[in-house]
Image 1 (cartoon, rainbow, N blue to C red):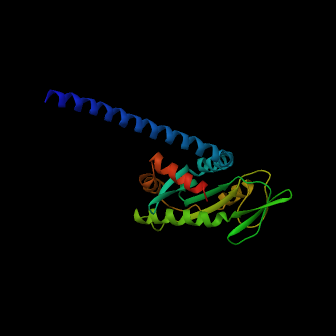
Image 2: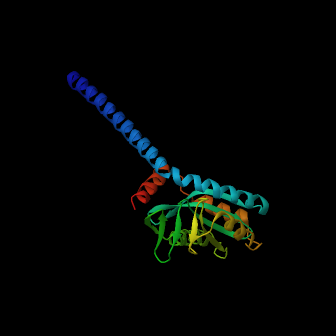
Image 3: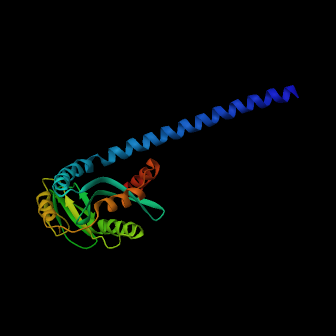
Length: 215
């Protein structure tokens, strides 16, 4: 019996060591994926900061609330909204693109011309429409289905040339914001409804970003 007890103690120790090793490996893998994801997003972050600066100035003047990089549940996963404004005007959902060159076209894909090279870009309005419907869905569930949800796509690169109506430049965004109606929406209720459902899990956020980067 004593021999059996000693052997079981050894097995238990090895099981604990293996479990600790597995946890450390999982944490290391998560850290590497997170760093890779941050590297992939660096280009877009510069544009998002420029847009956030414009939105922040507007929010202060209109007593609105600005939320950046807001993750909301979408089906079995989640989706990231670059910027979201809550105020008496309702909600403004902003999708930011930091691409350069000349953008033209319409339909599902746009054409980006950089010098002699051209690339296809998925139409950002389609992406933002998904975000708008998602916000409307969560507001409806919170009993705020009558809150208007506005949407803007902003090309934040200062060297952009737009030959399409697919989005706005930064100066055009400032003008569009000024045209928002005063409204009488309850900002606090809107903010509370969206903050209540927002995704907080770093794992869900990371998996969403990695899935998006593969598209």
